[in-house]
Amino acid sequence: MEVAQPPALKIATRPTGEIATSRNTGAPPMTVDVIFVMDGNAEILNLTVP
Image 1 (tube, rainbow, N blue to C red):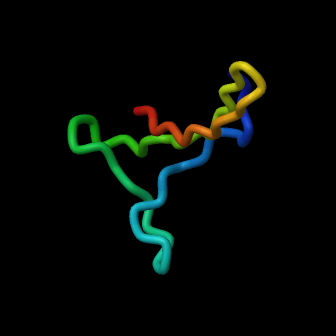
Image 2: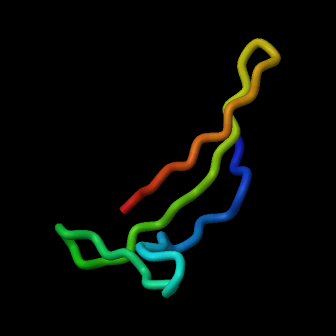
């Protein structure tokens, strides 16, 4: 796996640009896109991490 896009704050509402917050910690989660390649096939995974 390789990182396709650098980590960014997760957006809760795109039109307003509101940043999401974790219900457990109150901290803003981050999203990161990674590329997974296997047997010549590639998948882009969008992951959200606390």
